[in-house]
Length: 282
Image 1 (cartoon, rainbow, N blue to C red):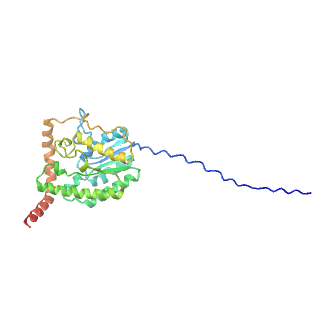
Image 2 (cartoon, rainbow, N blue to C red):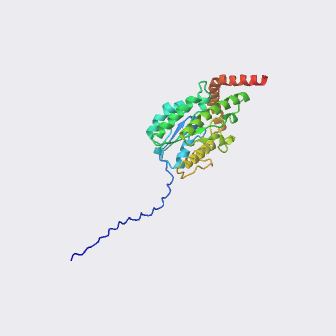
Image 3 (tube, helix red, strand yellow):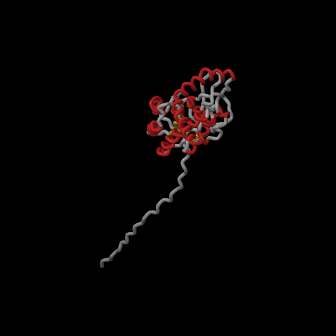
């Protein structure tokens, strides 16, 4: 007698492992910082005691981010235009491979007869692309109406304001296309307070540099960077220039600068004044 055995095969599908909640990513720490631009980027208006030289917005931002001294680079120089940032400062910045780059440039362009908003936009775009290629977050600035700070005749102020508006429109377009954070000086708290400006009313005072640094770190925090030591707006560590120092700067530096830039800017201002005169006649 032959017995029959039936074997039943049962396929068991293992239950999936329960998904564990993913911890949110923490803020990114900036280890390397570069500051590009003109005399404001250099730190003019915030002199250092004893050893001379300038501090300014760069070291303040570096301290707020926790950047070590060997991680900080500032190839900026006085009088620089946006094209100078691209051709003379960018190579060193790219070689530094920073996590963050601040760009403070464009105002010098507004005072030159060959001002071109299109070229400024193209130069800034190339700066952003080159730095983004090495993993850098770039933060440019858009500008306030400096005619409200540096007192000028109404016609000259109008001419400068129109130039600044063209500059800002160029920067706005780049910022929107590239999706980078931007510090808007027009809405920076206290931007038009005289205490925020040095005696020349061209460069920020120590307080002004601290305000700039606060604005930059706020934008960087919004972009996901850690700010372990927020900037303190209480002035300390700098030096208040003496009355003699004020006069000396104005005579040796300020007046010659205004004369040089004024001669270059005057033809544009004359056109603005002529158009204004024709409008009144109509």
